[in-house]
Length: 130
Image (cartoon, rainbow, N blue to C red; front, side):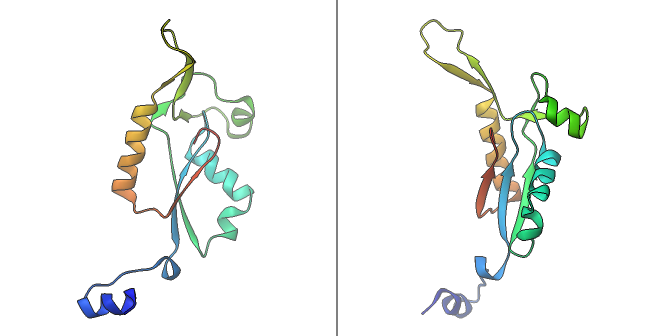
């Protein structure tokens, strides 16, 4: 018995990916935001190319920018509320080698919450830091 026929037999219904749009969680790049990423996807033709098959759910990172946004972003979109997923810094601890990713834990928690509240998602699309 197939999944569809067993679902009908049990009185429940399932929606396969073939019957609905794929839901893609989209994470923008460093010191940009959801609006910037939506514009980038539109300019690349993705939103029109995949309009019938995908729903792109674009979200903002939970941290306000901790420094200046990239000049090209500000030049195109103007001053605005830009965000970041984390900020990589050289670790100040003498016993640590490498980098420290400030805010990463909170960002991972925020993504998990987004999945719980706005999911389910079929995929993840990240650009640069996203």
